[in-house]
Image 1 (cartoon, one colour):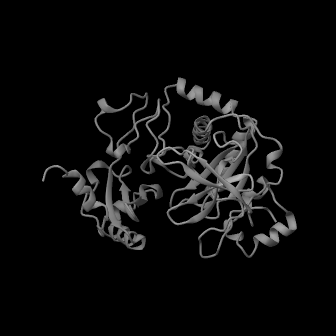
Image 2 (image 1 turned 45 degrees about the vertical axis):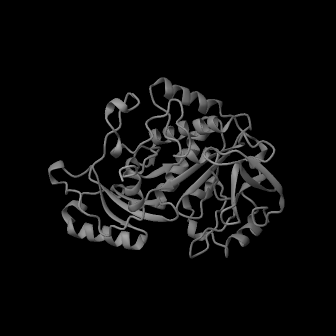
Image 3 (image 1 turned 90 degrees about the horizontal axis):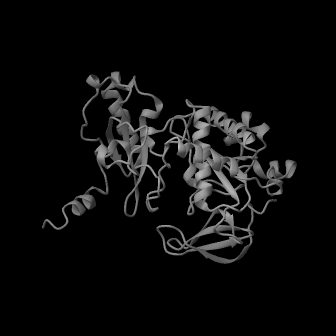
Length: 364
């Protein structure tokens, strides 16, 4: 069985993560895993470098994250586009199911580049795949701009981890993140890989990614592509919110909340402000989704004009909990027919009181 089924604790190392104090890392075999001091638990989500070289990843990670409503067929098609692109730049991708709705493609690389350089290569790759399959793939960070399958380049930032191969995911059928060969991708179904089926599969065929470390690749061609994008006036894509503002990064603000053009970083193709309305806020996701259905019933003529990716279901982080916000993008509705912003129903935003106190600080 692979070490992912049962890892041996080896020791501890420490790394500095942007936005945090030095982070303790548990060493399980050669990979490092995040240690949660808040819950006194160990996450079986390995980071991209090895413990011998924590500042230089030896893995480029391509996380295919479908927006709500996107089919598994589209995820597989985008994965195959990723394979075709990687072949063209001399890299080999190793696909696996995420164990949920998406797919991961990991690329073993030489540990010669920093996290910033590896992320830069991932941004260039994401944009290139979007150009290859513009109706299926998206490299846009802001949810209101996404469609289809999002290629999450920020999974290559320093603090990011992804589920390990053969890890069990928190779903009712206990699905397992399962390594695949590329010839399995067109017909695979993530529901086929569970704690009941994967051990037998492994006993029969072994570890599909056993040869992954044999031939690490180079990021030079991807970084050349990144240079071409920059020369064409394409700004760096947004970083995660807790990172400092990076040189060359586009405005780190949702387009629908963007300030005046004078305050934006000049780019050749300015973002378009989307016509968004909020229809539900609730700590209970089921209640928020029920509110969405009531809004669709009330505005049936408008709802029929919406695309799947016009309904944005966001998991929001409060100070100590999460809550669900649902917004509607009215971009496909003629301006004169767009309904106004109404009071969301339900409208239970647990951060509202805190935000009001912050807004009025010093006025009392």
